[in-house]
Length: 363
Ligand code: SF4
Image 1 (spheres, protein in one colour):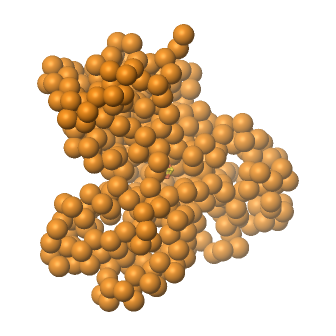
Image 2 (tube, protein in one colour; image 1 turned 135 degrees about the vertical axis):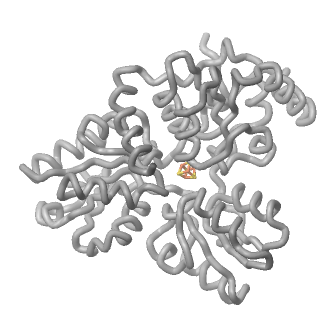
Image 3 (spheres, protein in one colour; image 1 turned 60 degrees about the horizontal axis):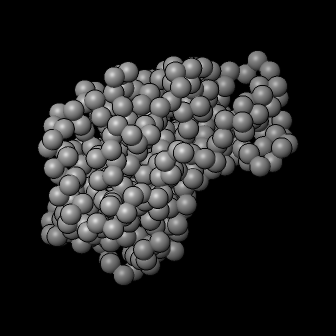
């Protein structure tokens, strides 16, 4: 019977945090250089504290591609572990301690829907050179589609450069799955509104567009979203500015366009960490991104006032939060038997092209 990931043995399920932490540390020291534990910035703090390398999607993909460890334990979500498997060598094995940790936004662009949309677009726009670009938050088969069709993958920190790269190669960009990152990136490129088309994958007729809309469009954006970052509203910005005069507001570009436009700065997770790190002591900063990162920044920089932008605790990625000490201990103590994340080579081959282009574009 296959292992069911949400039911780990009682030995792990019922252990105390102190016991689990000790076992994780002991297993890490036993494996030494054969193991690396990667942690995304949105992980809960007890997991984050046990990682060897931390970062956002881009930094972790790069670390995975350069690290020589035999066992790569990825405390993040499924698409990240897939990217790590694609970018690593054959002898390396990638694990996701809680493989139920997915990304709902990545799942909004299923390969069937993407292929269907591509067929419709290429038929509606004969002769047009369309460059597909997938956000790194996408499944391996979607990345493979992009690699096979002359496109690239990007992260939130490389989206602007990826669009630039795309426009050098074609007249239109087809971007998925995040409409908001696509819109904010199109704005940074100065693309007029009437040259941006939103592709509603639930609408069978040209994704909700006319042929003229698509002919005019330079950017065609999949109508996907991150439920964490779309929590933020311009009202939150107005309230925050009233409550904390002089506050600086920094948000992630997966937030809606109006929020990004009303903020003082926007950028990837690494950009936000850097922004807070470099702010002088006494700074007051409200952040529009995932709560676990905001909370950790507030604790790391007690000499700065750090707030979560919406003023409540809803902005949590429950999928990132799924990975617990119980999962990590169970995974590390059972590396031989827990299932690995293994992308079939026929998909990995083309997805690797898209990911390697991403690493090259970002530098
Ligand atoms: S924060 Fe949003 S985009 Fe990131 S993993 Fe969670 S659901 Fe996906």
